[in-house]
Length: 191
Image (cartoon, rainbow, N blue to C red; front, side, top):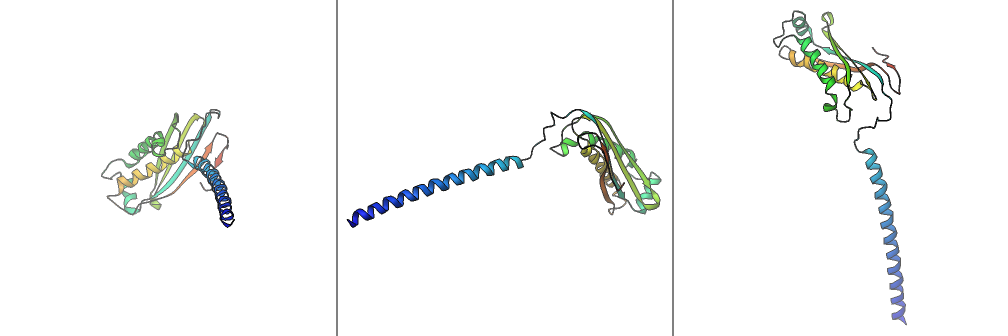
């Protein structure tokens, strides 16, 4: 009798353990499916803009390059050894606007209709103000293209002037304004 009781208890125990194992496997599988769903929504992806209407999009960005007195004097007299700093920097910024998706992998390639960059010397304060304007007729905005243009122009200024001073500082990169699209117009409170 004791033998059968032990055997019966062992069968019941095995049955309980089997159910517990199946239950925990099922719970783990559910957790794995949930985690997979969450992971797929967190994976890098280019947003689908196919259903958005094509509208006129514009963006203006800017930054400040603190160049110091010696560099400001060289810029004012156009005596930087590498050449015309502002012309080269402006062209570099335009090129960056056109190639933004190559730098920022989740940006959409856009048919830009306009890209301009302006570098303005404030000799008295030893600063260069960089402004980039970009526009297109598209389904997504051109803010990143504008920011890429301004920052690249500033980097080019640094590159061309670094033999004079390594203490050049690029600061205050920001979106100044944008228009078009679902979110509407924006103007920075800090121009």
